[in-house]
Length: 444
Image 1 (cartoon, rainbow, N blue to C red):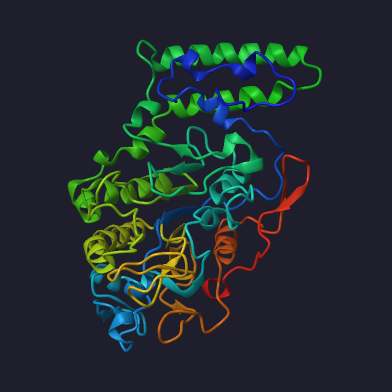
Image 2: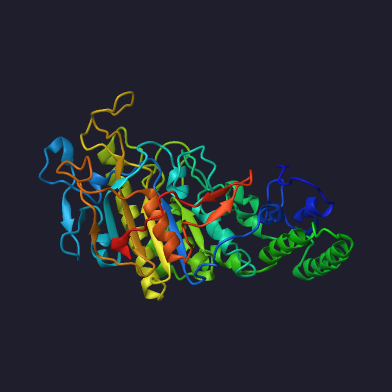
């Protein structure tokens, strides 16, 4: 078992939810994951708002999607043609006709500054790998903890990827890791054989009594933080809210087909159901194919070779799922309260077949590039616009580029969280959420 605890340890701290009838949590309890390890700081945030983060691992090609250069030489512009959207001046790739019809519901950031390599942790933390900074979802979980009984604040649908994704809580403690569903997964939300909700409630009541007794004997109050997280874990397991939110079979066939019936597209529908139920942050990347390649796999945009066949295969799935998500949110009146963000950890090189120093790209591929794009929709932000600009080859920004920290600052702003606030790290030092807390003014 992982060592989640420090300092004085109690018998109660080692209690496992397995003892209460919970199965499938892989060796440690949900209570362990929910236990708070540090004192909360900062405002409570806006309880109405939620964020869906669509991570596109590997670095999607900006020049083949949202920042096309039709007048550039063929070795730069590539094979695809731009098509106009319903917003003047906002052209998109011909393989995304659905998104072109709802461009008034999203904005595009061009010349978006990224690490330029496979550092996915910077997408969610704003800092390079190894900086020991908490993920965006973990911060939101900390600020909104215990906001709503029976639901986690932070959920990930990322089952597996060829790249790590920064979702760790760092010094905020394991209580603020994302609630993760892997593989069959729903077993994590079911009671063990022979345990029904009534029996679970009986044991929950017993725990309340034992905790009261322990607190009476505990003059220093060290037990006070233990029972709250165990009982919250019991609420999640005994409530149908989380299980129902994951269950897309409760949707009509028409809605499911609008997103697409393949597993990758279904994650977009699950994300909508989760935020509708009250989850604050959902991350997804659209499935993962461990061996080989699938057009329905939206979590591998690392196109060092076969850039154009790969993009031609994947973009229609991406177009359908993402356009369905924002259309669905609008139809349900959720667009002002839910922000959807889609980006990768970098873009792709403008010139086809030319590798960076020490890297690689075949004659049909695009190498890594530090300039990319960010797609954003909803949350009461200003939609239907292009922010930023790149040069005629899409290689560099012609204005001061916006960064991942600026994006995160904007998301914190939407959620009513002050990005200049501090939390205390493991060494007792105050740490700012961001070093550049400037939000994207054009969106707000």
